Image 1 (cartoon, rainbow, N blue to C red):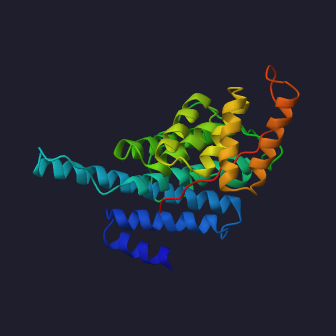
Image 2 (tube, one colour):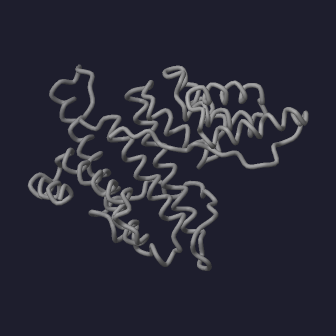
Length: 276
């Protein structure tokens, strides 16, 4: 398997960045293709992938330091690029989903036992994100909520690092906007990121839909939302989520309800733009 071959590379060259990232990505693909249906096993494997990425980032930093010592006046960076950082951020979001969905007993020990060798949790102490809809009943969910929050903050950091390298990278902008919008509920920051996406790609369908929903639900900018929904429907006339949101908006406008909050839930198109 690809995972096994990458492991052989790592055994031969423990600091081989491509090998570390390759195996981590293979683990992520296995998780997303539903090869790991057991949530406890999924958490362990994703934690292992997370540790592989952490090792790759450490190796990359060391490589950069060596390069600077050889050529101190040359501007550059290591091998870790925007694709790697966005993939790691997506992995962290997937891991947060696993922790949010599984009862604590199902994932007990995954964070400590599933990794590929140590590594501290940089997100420890981050604000907890309250999650609902978990499958488990009973048990103390506070530790899980805290870990979910830490993982989402760490994912945010990865996207921001990617944007330091390429400030106009559409996938990184869009995925960070989704994270700030849907997961962290940071509406102002999310709206700014969505607008940066549209500055690069005015017909970015997901951004048109999600920014429209955000303008409507958070900012009560119904006319702005209407314009975005209409642009989105010109691109995808049969998209059910956008049709639902647009219908609800038109109903609200007819009822002259600008001064009150919408009474039905908006549907978002929260899908990532993959970069690997």
